[in-house]
Image (cartoon, rainbow over all chains, first blue to last red; front, top):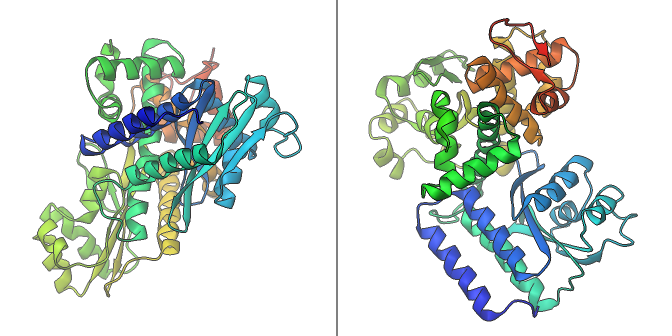
Length: 239
Length: 201
């Protein structure tokens, strides 16, 4: 990165450690990670997906709306760098979108249209198992070996986050945590729907309302969405 | 398998052998156990050894089912996000973890149980459940968003909202994802005053 300064990197690790000891919210944690990785580059957006028990990827978190769309496009059309990294278990780096149409006929043109020039994807791994992928969608960014190592390390940190508060004893502990994480993403979508309907806004706008409310009231995203989905009558007060 | 509702109503819905009815009933009687914990925490609770730590975790439940010859229990919540329907419990007479493949299988059975329970609620035509399975559990955020919107539109729970959406998509013979997109785009509204009669706006 030569782009990533040691100071920047160490501050990310401090923040990660801080999150892991604090009251933990998995979606918020993944969101924070994607934002920090995006912050390493000038022109990048980052998204993260996790696999369910049927080995299908699910969108979990993104640094911004553009990254979320890039992830959803890959899921919808079943092609793209994150799927490749997930399936092969290996990073896919420094692919220029120009000329990538034969590799990703659906994803490449849409990503170019969104203004991206290069894409990079890193598998989320736990021992031999691949449980997800993190995608970096960027301008003309060239990652060198040390950059790759740093981003892959942060993808590994995401896995550690999923397993937090428990020793990695068995594969089944992972499935408990993974199922919980996948389900909390679904809860967020349901809460977005509830707020969208109650406030007459789009689900995306609803998410901004929910996130801002959580921030300004110093509450966890999961806590707020849980309140929304379990207490329908009071949702109109989200201000 | 137990069916549970948010308002505290609960009961055993089905068992593979009659003897398990009482075993499944046990955690309701004792008010503790992996099944209740899976429901409360919304995540699978896998207990490969009903000894040691499990004794401390559920001091009433663990010895009681240990006495009945069981050595391991695995509880899988039946849920779609915040919409919770119950728990699927798998018991074993010997200690040991489930393999990754067995966990996947149990989760898939739990998916099937969820769709069956949802469709029973709306008395959908038999045989339609399997087709809709991928849609409910699919990656489409719109389905979950629509579920939230319909629950507010109709003033019903998230479970009822999803059952309603599924019934509508069967009745109209349209994919659930497409119906959900219409709801999110506000081309379709579900009205509580006229159940079964949706108003196109």
